[in-house]
Length: 209
Ligand SMILES: Nc1ncnc2c1ncn2[C@@H]1O[C@H](COP(=O)(O)OP(=O)(O)O)[C@@H](O)[C@H]1O
Ligand SMILES: Nc1ccn([C@@H]2O[C@H](COP(=O)(O)O)[C@@H](O)[C@H]2O)c(=O)n1
Image (tube, rainbow, N blue to C red; front, side):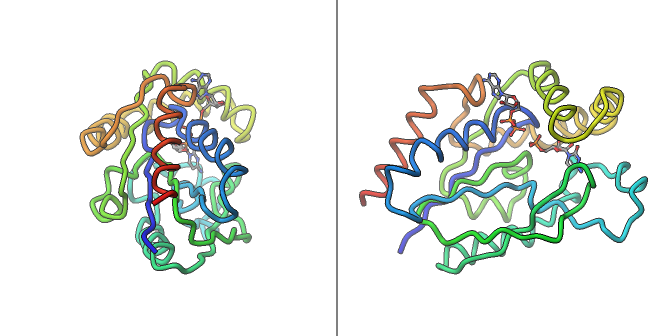
């Protein structure tokens, strides 16, 4: 069976999760069970349980080295080959993996979302369709502040410091240039209805082949 892997990349808080999740939620009930799956790059942040908490807060989470991309690549190859994989579950408040995993079955269409998907040569080879969510960075920062404080256990001060030290510089060094590797650039993030419908139609077409 041919499987299609769709990558959704872009800055932190650009709307990648909302975009991917909207497509998934709107399709999942009208498709046969197991036709579509969703996978997050964030699940592949390296395990740091061997480090004290204070050290874990100092990690540059926007540099490619923060991710175990080799494991992600291996999992994508396994899914393409028709095998299930056990994906780590990441804990943002603890800055490390939890001891739980989530089983992902080999769906015909797999949506993958994450900040650095298109900057990694090996990972890029696994993607059939590459989308870049292009949201202005000031909008991303506002959304990130709200989300990180409400959902990821952060203080306003820590969001501002991390943004200046790593998030913004790594965006310009790695994420923004990777836009050139995309097939499609989507403006207005997770609520671009035309783009959501286009990807949904493409997925429906793939599943009918
Ligand atoms: N177009 C949009 N309009 C309003 N809010 C949005 C939009 N896109 C995303 N958001 C919100 O911004 C926050 C970050 O979006 P999210 O999808 O989690 O970003 P990412 O996955 O790129 O980090 C979330 O709270 C989300 O609901
Ligand atoms: N312990 C961690 C791990 C990651 N981050 C930040 O998450 C961002 C990527 O996730 P998005 O959902 O926003 O795409 C990335 O910019 C990291 O800075 C973190 O703060 N702490």
